[in-house]
Image 1: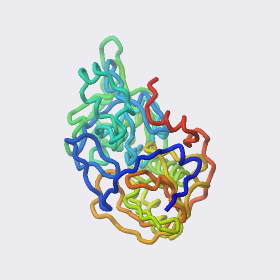
Image 2 (image 1 turned 90 degrees about the vertical axis):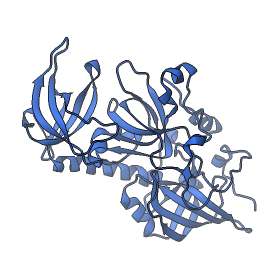
Image 3 (image 1 turned 135 degrees about the vertical axis):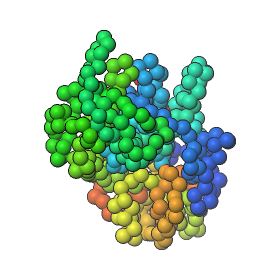
Image 4 (image 1 turned 180 degrees about the vertical axis):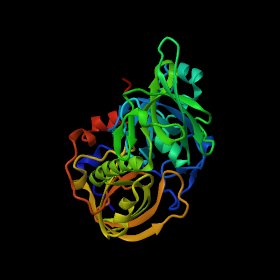
Length: 388
């Protein structure tokens, strides 16, 4: 059967046909390198990395963290199924403010993405962990700690000394010990730039009282200290911030479509065929529910950055859902939803292990031009992080 290849797809691949992946989720073997196409990493793969977000490329879902004042930037790319959390809600790189302190789970580059993040021999010799530069999870402090049952008990305020004396918020951890987290009493810089939240409103820092359980977000402070950007005094205020971020996320995905990858393809002799897709995890549950409730969708292909081709709505194939399967205990990076689609047009990008986005019952909007991959040159540029 001759596949239908749109203008946008034609710039994507020439002659590389990947072997079919099995329909059920498998695990990548860390010993043989990074994750494989169509294969979610095994549990516990990778290393913990944290630092302030000092470089951000929202269009290609890339950036750099800096752990300390003298540390080199740890450049990274999000894996296609890499998840971002902000204020305890699903997010993307574009939602993260510059300088925010983040925690991530970083893996070796995905197969075929080894050149995405440029590395030098000297950097690897001095900082071997920079080889791990593809993130499966990235989250701010409040998401990282609250997800794992951690809060902070306020011990009081202290006036710091030294050449740059600063007021400190003294806290101790409440909850379990956490890998990569602060597991002992700590002093965080605090001043009038800190946003203090109570009853869904901003209040003065004098509302922080000894004995309170609070949540915080952090950023760099002088002399490698950590400084507060936000302090939440109650769950009501944190929930309000979480709801705002959730709605930002919903607006983003409804206009860009729900991402996943192709597990299996069956071509029909007379055109079209069947495509089985597993959706990526880390999205709001209502988006998956929207797909579960309908039978007719549209599907288009995308790159590993999740960028779609020019006019992705117009080039998308109409499709009918034939099966909806629930995945038990999905691995990190995967959702629990897999669907089998009958597609009208079998686009060239519908290949096992390749990325697609599926449009649910959401209003289509025109995206900014530079978010699309709109030329062969743009596709080549998208393959590698351009260092600032």
